[in-house]
Length: 169
Image (cartoon, rainbow, N blue to C red; front, side, top):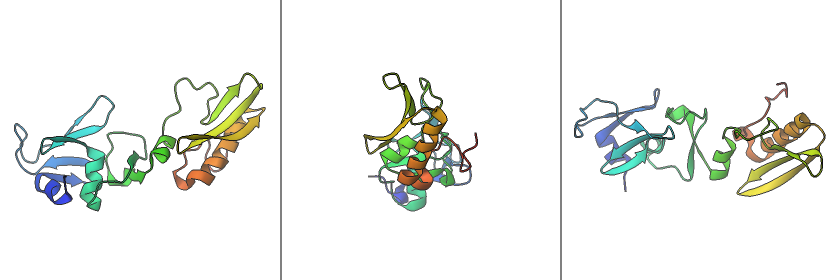
């Protein structure tokens, strides 16, 4: 298993930029050259000792001397931004909260959908793979505000909200 000591033998990490640089020559890569490449999803991947690692997990190992338990979240949602201040250790459920609103979302709000049967907006939130019903509302904005309140209760500062603290948007 890769340790932080072994990692630091072959790579340097700049926490301000999130970039890795080779300390030693690796094939065609010269010492001092930028390490890694973006995959099809935008994550930076780096091959170290014949195994491919995600750069954000390597950054965590480099700084904290251990791999993250669970997931590593890119706070600003930019998958190639591996600055240590942009990374946080989260559960899978917390990581899913910090995702973009899906393209097929028709309400325009996170955690809100139209219930054709009930002719109301349904507010809900997911936690640990389970859907929690928040309630039904006549207005989509009311449902979004209810979602935000529940999200703050469940996820605290990691909650991804529809509105800021002032509920103006």
